[in-house]
Amino acid sequence: MNEADYVPIAALNQYAYCPHRCWRMFCAGEFIDNQYTLEGTGLHDRVHTLGSNHRGDTWQVRAVWLKSDRYGLIGKSDLIEEADGQLYPVEYKRGHRGEFDNDELQVCAQALCLEEMTGRSVTQGFIYYAQSHQRQPVELTAELREAAIATLAAVRTLLHTGQMPPPEYTPRCRGCSLYDRCLPQAAKKVSRYRE
Ligand code: SF4
Image 1 (cartoon, rainbow, N blue to C red):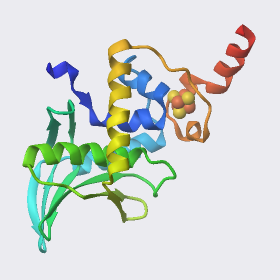
Image 2 (image 1 turned 180 degrees about the horizontal axis):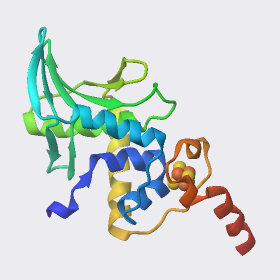
Image 3 (image 1 turned 135 degrees about the vertical axis):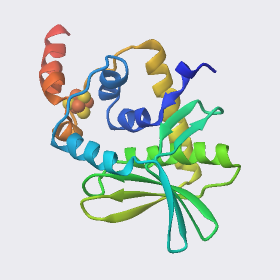
């Protein structure tokens, strides 16, 4: 597999959020910040300093690159921890626990890489929500693994074909930094006129 064939782990998260947004970011190279993305970038800038330490009985390493040759995945982790003999990824997110499962797919993809790199099984990961200062456990079930692998296949097809999924207006659009470019409601009206 060529380096260019590796799918960024973050693309799975974006695709699960909205395939059209994923296309804009990873095929069209568009990105615009809004309040939410700026807060997220600031959070990751603080976290993404390579280093390891012990916190009590927990070993922590930050900003490690994760890669899977089997799945063709690559991405930088926020935090990897080992405690009680268990190794697991922790993904940092701004805000509160959301109603969407895209962050869980990202944690699962990190775990797939971690398993391949270490030869150890990873049964759980976490999402740390900065606003609420809470860690949400993510159980790496067979269903979540299947969903992550299916999303990976969809993203790979998107990146290979470059074919644009149409924008769809959903509750997610309200927090999307690309809303003003995408104008999903206007796009829907235009497509109706064309029918
Ligand atoms: S505004 Fe909505 S449809 Fe458009 S990219 Fe964002 S989430 Fe997707």
